[in-house]
Image 1 (spheres, each protein chain N blue to C red):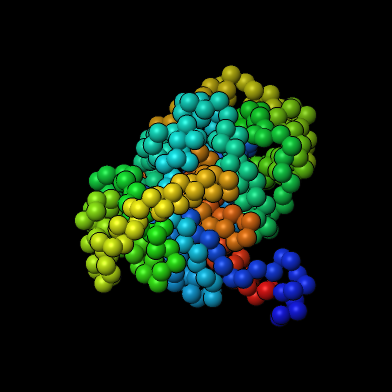
Image 2: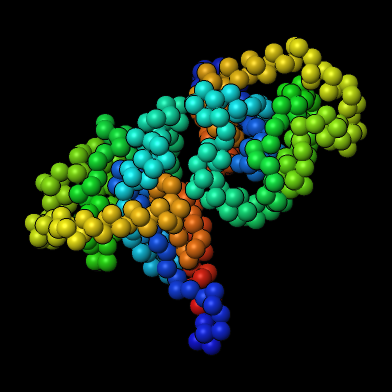
Length: 213
Length: 213
């Protein structure tokens, strides 16, 4: 109700910030699932592509914890196979992990408010975690954009322009200031949800926030 | 069917190995939930108390990752409050974390096949994560055993005997050889499930293994 919204500073629109990295396997699961979940709940997804590398570096790691911690990494591959099976998401263990993703993340950042963002992200993720293909080369990214009927050359140029590169740096600073330490991470207002295992809880909270608004 | 079981080397009884540490907050959630889940599924829980400390040390950590990684630790406390609320488990953030738990883990190891093991574990966990009390002093452990109507002095003596101390060392070796890197961790046969977030999947797999046996 209008009056409620005005009188209640806690009220919020049904929105969810969705932070993800194209190299992150658990981000893959959430990228594949989020649009349908959010639509069913009447929740708007605010796409927040970012890169985990600088976050990990600041924690003293020069690679993914799944590479640095061998036992955890071994487990993760088994868990991924089971989780993809559970959610009906295609899966092939990538021959390279984690894959570099600077160019697709810049494109996603450039297009994060465009109607093609969700489908672009799913297709990049499927290249990585189902087709086992490079996702960082210009022709890899162009191939995805062309599949969507977009002007690949113009979008890649804009994504690599200085203004957009700077935006990605600012996004890393923002991720750090929000306390993000992994991906995927969702925010509903100040409430943080880490991991594909909390995606449903995050969507549910956003739905309720919308109801009370 | 008997013939099936004999002809199928995959068949297994409906059993689940449950590895947990009394200092581990996500182990707390699983200790509180597992007996009811397993009973509903007709699954037998094989209790596997152990200590994470030596596992973390072998990974190069001198403390819990929730202490060493501040952003992750901050998040974890918020997540715990929400998870306890979700599962209807009492919660107070401990003033000391992670608490030392050598004595209760020795007692649990000594009694892991006893009928009081599940209730003992729940009461030790509730001391830590709901009452915010020490769990490692002899009188703390004795208080729990006495609540269960047991001979606290005799059990604590047996738990601290050399044979039982040696068993705990062997258990750490076993945990390492199984690839355990955190707690709680469940096994159904060779299939590993890490975290309270996978407890239901583990119980379900054990249930199905029992059906096919």
